[in-house]
Image (cartoon, rainbow, N blue to C red):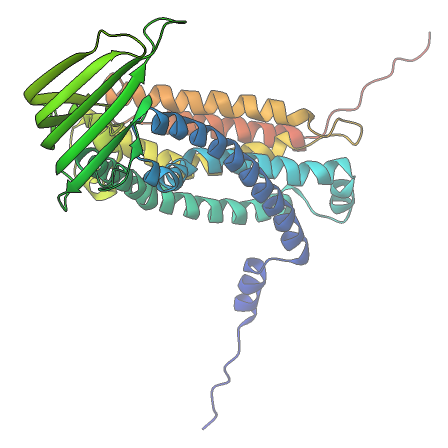
Length: 391
């Protein structure tokens, strides 16, 4: 009995050879990946700069606890990746393939027999990796980051401990000049004892500052009926106010005095809650327009990466004498048009003015058709010009 020889058939070897990236494929993929990483780093720095400035202003106004600054910054960055990564993919293709065109390496590859299919093969692999990464972020990590940020802000708005107020330590008042001190505090940060508050404000420029001192034996933190406004109820205390250097100070004793605290930035609107909803909940949303709009927006992340990679292939074609970054402005304009169309379609779906079956597919299909036409027209040979015979 002959033993079966474990060997691949010629057809299997051909399939394996077709699936294995060649040396040229790996070279082109490395060029695109390098441009993608560089674009992602630059865009992340721009995004982090804007997010840090926004969060610092809200920390200064007392709307965000200082302890949550870096946590919220990381969560906001993670939830912004479905918008940032498709643009990075487009710029990566432009930077990678654009350099090859300028350095005449594309002419060498084409003379060696590499056609449009050979140039698109590494882009297909890159687009597959980018779409997979974006699908994980868009369907799972992004909504989880939004839910975590909302939960942290809700806890911060209901607890003085998370907001940075510690018993036995003077803390600056957020958003204005002054200090606050608490002698004792409950474990959940909602009740306290022996509170001291001192604040100053200038009613008119050039006049002495007006000082306000409040003491209370005890108190507690509560929310308004709408669940947004935060108040600190002070019980059994004194209040002294007046201008420094003058004799018009006023002393008042109170049984209870409620002080409004700065509003937190937690967004409890219906649209914000559905943006943070798990994808499984959106799939069971039924006929709710907000659920349909959010589900289509999450699908748009991976699809936009694929469409923009295809769009970047014909846009990267340039002559050696063309300026290095001449095509970047055109690519940014194309991305802005595409992204704004997605935003418009999303708002139409949320308002139920667009049929549910249309979704955002018409935008993706239109952009894909434009990319296909640009690829086809770029590969088509021009007809030779006829030269008229001399009379």
